[in-house]
Amino acid sequence: MGIAISPQIHPQVADFIDKPRKMLINGKWQNAVSGKTFPTYNPATGEVLAQVAEGDRDDIDQAVRAARKAFDQGPWHRMTPSERGRLLWKLADLLEQHTEEFGYLESLDNGKPLAVAKAADVPLAVDLFRYMAGWATKIEGNTLPISVPYTPGAKYLAYTLREPVGVVGQIIPWNFPLLMAAWKLGPALATGCTVVLKPAEQTPLSALRLGELVQEAGFPDGVVNVVPGYGETAGAALAAHPDVDKIAFTGSTEVGKLIVHAAAGNLKKVSLELGGKSPNVVFKDADLDTAIPGSASAIFFNHGQCCCAGSRLYVERSVYERVIEGVAEEARKIKVGSGLEPDTQMGPLVSEEQLRRVCGYLEAGLSEGAQAVVGGQKAGSKGYFVEPTVLVNTNEKMKVVKEEIFGPVVTAMPFDNPEEILPRANDSEYGLAAAVWTRDISKAHQLAANLRAGTVWINCYNIFDAAMPFGGYKQSGWGREMGHDVLNLYTQTKAVCAKLA
Ligand code: NAP
Ligand code: MG
Image (cartoon, rainbow, N blue to C red; front, top):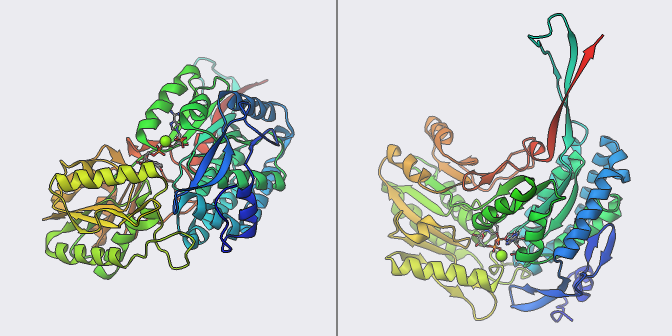
């Protein structure tokens, strides 16, 4: 079954996608209770890549029960922080040993270039697990010097414990399937939580393979459960489940709001990493030799399917023409093709639905008067390819400037002075990221302080590290992933107060 396996495909990957993939519940690989499966597609060809067990309410229920048992009674809750850290480190080692294989899985399922998956997605996931492994032994409470006014003379020992929040539901998107699984699993496991993970329907394969490595690393049964399925069924059941203590979600702002509603039933804790429409600001005093390719990669990296993509390009008027022409030239040079071709720099969008969405935005922009300096349409006759696109003659009233396109489309606008740019850059319901290109360090840091965004890059873009917190202001989300900030999302504080005799 599946696509004809080209000889280029890594043999273990060919083997992996050749069989219908099961779900991981309580340490066992099993079919869906309903017996149903769903297809995942190769976006470079539109053909079915593999069949995957379709989890639903009943499977989510089983997985939550397994995670609850593992949290309350299993060997996991008796393990020392050091043992948890070592398991995470082992998982990182295993993943690193399988870099090639995961690169192929990501490229086939998501469409991204193999070279990018191997250079970015897999190493970033490995590093995240190692970073979080280190935290397992460093999650500390405080001792509190208290002075209770109504018990004069009494002495107390007061302290806090940082405890794992419990059973965590995690719902992830398709743009960085493995890396998003790592961002979610790493902190949950470092803090001692147990997990039910639902990957995106478009890209379930790497999370399922990671589930095998979780077992190989030796995590006890039920600590990590992976239930693929659709958002409206499996995802919704997980978000609403009364025995889930916390839900962590990455995806669209629209679904983020549904998650909040679903979580209200038992008031589970919620963290959200949502959409963006990030401003990328180039000043005339920038080093244009780095700002131009940097601004191109800000939008075209991962085919623009990044929540933090630099999709609103603002350029100071005196260098506007030069920067736009430079970014357009970068776009023209991008080799678009199947992710498995060695010279491919941009693959297809993830799905036909996404292709339709992005093309819909292109049509809307062009009909509202925007002009494509380069690109502007679908590319190729099969697969879900779109030309890297630079739109000019745009303004803040246009749909293409206001809404997240999630494709390789940047809207460019000139500005006249530094005072004007801050309100324009902040004029968005989103606040995930922003960038500033300038040689003037005062200007750069003043803007960094005033931009309403969770991440500000100065003279760079798309720099991620496990130590750097990531998340959104405004409607781009709640909470921060990565860094030590993320530990707050997966722990809760208990205050203990003992009266000393
Ligand atoms: P999405 O629907 O928000 O999907 C994200 C995750 O949520 C997937 O696992 C999805 O499952 C699940 N989901 C969907 N509906 C759900 C529900 N009612 N309850 C619980 N879980 C649910 O995103 P999308 O439809 O794939 O993409 C649409 C747009 O979202 C994109 O064009 C882009 O603008 C934005 N997006 C943002 C990010 C980001 O990183 N911030 C990532 C992806 C997409 P299914 O896979 O089955 O739908
Ligand atoms: Mg969806």
